[in-house]
Amino acid sequence: MNSFISSDLFLLMLTTGLFCLGGIIYRRTRLALLHPVLLTFVAMIVFLQTTGIPYSRYQEATRILDFALGMSVVALGYLLYEQVERLRGSLVPVAVATLVGCVTGVLSVVYTAKAFGAERMILNSIAPKSVTVPIAVSVSGPLGGNVSVTSVV
Image (cartoon, rainbow, N blue to C red; front, side):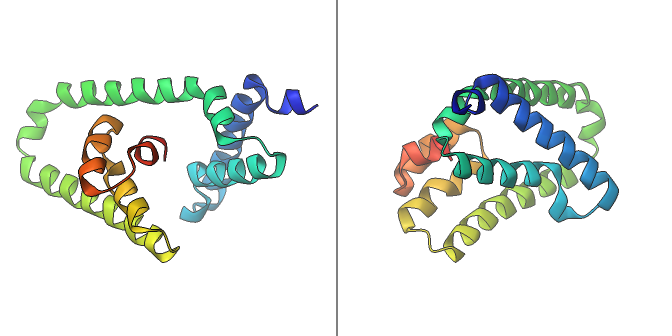
């Protein structure tokens, strides 16, 4: 039974199933705390802790989702490129919104971790996580962070 629960197919199906269930719950309640990504995140943490399945095993089993996420980022970039003419007139609002979003992302992660008592090295490792992993890894080292933490978290 334990090998079935830790199998690639089960972990992948559980993740997608929990996300779909979270989507149903969110559509019915419209509560931000019941967003499908947050519900799936919390449910998977509880499941992995309860079953003793290491995160590295889960990450290996769901690598197809990481691949699909990477493809969706590329697709979003392409769609943005296709709309560049429409965006030219809105350059200032888009730039301001992007800047505010980046600053908010970094500050919320750092202050949340700080509130939970994270060490300075951990804070320096997770601060650059609002950008892509290659950039975050190159920024983390000079900040005094641990590059392996930056690339995994």
